Image 1 (cartoon, rainbow, N blue to C red):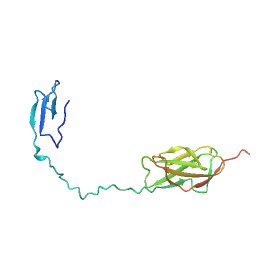
Image 2 (cartoon, rainbow, N blue to C red; image 1 turned 90 degrees about the vertical axis):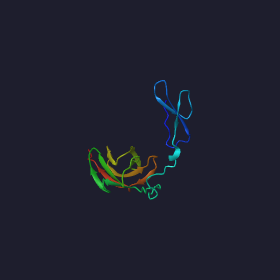
Image 3 (tube, helix red, strand yellow; image 1 turned 180 degrees about the vertical axis):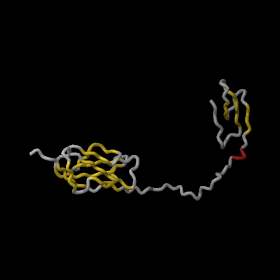
Image 4 (spheres, rainbow, N blue to C red; image 1 turned 30 degrees about the vertical axis):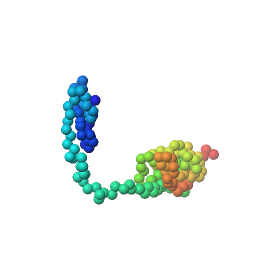
Length: 160
């Protein structure tokens, strides 16, 4: 086992010896056969060579005011798809950061689980009027921003 000597040694005496494996060991406790090393304590008052007083190192509070928008579908649009598929695209400003997730609501019901991107593919949406909304969640699941609701109309051919 070897010990490192700290740069700011507080003990004036340091001893050195080789253990049974031949490894050099430093200690402040003497051992039979150990050799005492003199430590130069004149350099204990070392000051930094860089003046950091001009640096602004106070923690900065970032203003994380997020905006969430639904880009597609547009409000009051009609989607014609016999499979009931709708592609939803959202936009988060300023940036989608790590740890955030986004939840899609369809007719005020969460659609699947929150995810880490703002593109959704809805399947088998029934005919008629529907409303969607995106909600941005932080790492703890707290809502930090939400979009305005968007209404769209699903048009599916009828067999009647």
